[in-house]
Amino acid sequence: MTTRRAFLAEAAGAVAGLAFVGCDLLKARPAAAQAARRMVSVAGRRVKTIDVHAHAAVPEAMALMSPPASPPGLLPKLLMGAPQERLALMDAQGIDVQALSINPYWYKADREVATRICEIQNEKLAQICAANPERFVAFATVALQHPDLAAAQLEEGVKKYNLRGAAIGGSVNGEEISDPKFQPFWAKAEQLGVLVFIHPQGTAELNATTRFKGNGGLDNVIGNPLETTLALSHLIFEGTLDRFPAIKICAAHGGGFLPSYAGRSDAGCVVVPARCGVPLKKRPSEYLRQLYYDSIVFTPEALRHLAAETGPGQIVMGTDYPYPWTSTSVNHILDTPGFSDAERTAMLGDTAAKLLRI
Ligand SMILES: [Zn+2]
Image 1 (cartoon, rainbow, N blue to C red):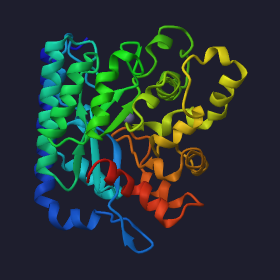
Image 2 (image 1 turned 90 degrees about the vertical axis):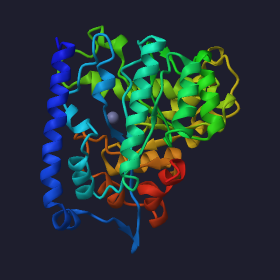
Image 3 (image 1 turned 135 degrees about the vertical axis):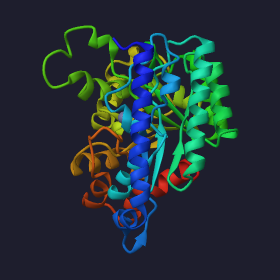
């Protein structure tokens, strides 16, 4: 178990380490860094590429949890104290802008602690974006377990800190984000017209059983997309998307499994109408066309299918930095056959630029 002191020491060491690397890079930077930056073009037109799925961490906020939030294995790469290493990777991959998000670990915190954690994080995110306005924007962190507080934090994040939306989990302490208690947050997001990025937190309920045990890392490879599938399905079937038709949502990992098998969601209410209590304004699968999805679906065929189900204008590029799922997100979009130049440009950055006001 990591003690608070050990964690802080480790975090401080990591910051110091990064700062050291940063200084070295800075000295060597001008010629090498310029040469290494990949500029992406489509049909001769330079595209400002935007990564909507890029993780960050603020250790001084994590330390406020009791016990302190355990640092993920890749914590040094998540820190924003000296982003030279991150920028170098972005340069090599052809990513012009990252939209930073912090995965929620504070949903069990009481109101006071959750207020402080999000405040520290949002301030820090604002600082890093202000210091590198060409390369970073960020999503606000919000205490969704206290929905009225989350709404206020989102508003403050957007208006005071120039953050571009909010990043939330796919559930909150076992409660669905479609639960009526979260409506103050959705109302605020709709009113502000900002993007809400939904990142799964896994399915803790299944992790407690044997279903995900064994090889393959099923709690991650199945559990994460499963949670996103559940979250989006609840937003559709509980009528949240009818109640807040203008909310802008971007789902991680291509929306999980939902766009792969949406026809069954339509058929369910036809075959078993008694189980569809809330009358919806549209067919369930039609709601997929008003949501956004990152491009982390691994194969050209999966990207083609996602675009066919949701519309190519609903897909935005994601990398999942620093988790090495994908190092070729730009190429994935450039090399998948069948898209027009305009569709590729939209996926690489134009759609995200509009959503994130870049
Ligand atoms: Zn991620």
